[in-house]
Length: 155
Image (cartoon, rainbow, N blue to C red):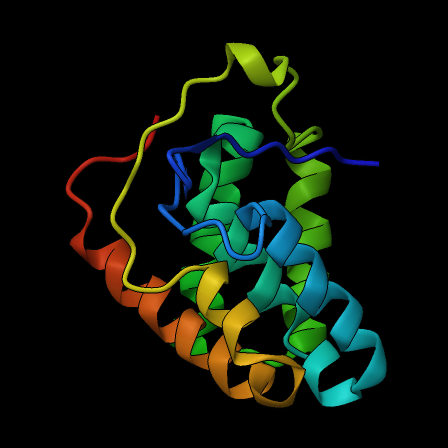
């Protein structure tokens, strides 16, 4: 199982900037929509977008190759309005070519850089299960806009 680690500093994630809500780190907030999607097939259809938005905002958890793969796949899927089944097929093909995408370094040895994101998992968590579909779609759009605005890659 992949272990994601976030470092909260002064109540904010050191990478995405999400605020700690009710004692939950951004990673703990991320777990909620993963559970919610099991209750709603339409929400589950957004699984790729949920996971890729989170991944792109937490690059320390991934290898440079894994991050670059996700960014490229995210942009191509977004720009071409790919169906979920095609996105997942492409993802499997690409991951098979590079192998391991998760960062093998212990969490304490990873470099983390805060980037300013217009939306984070905090926004999805706060909207609740009833509004998650709409909020994940907004998050996807927001991440795409933010990716255009970053002058420097996290690696």
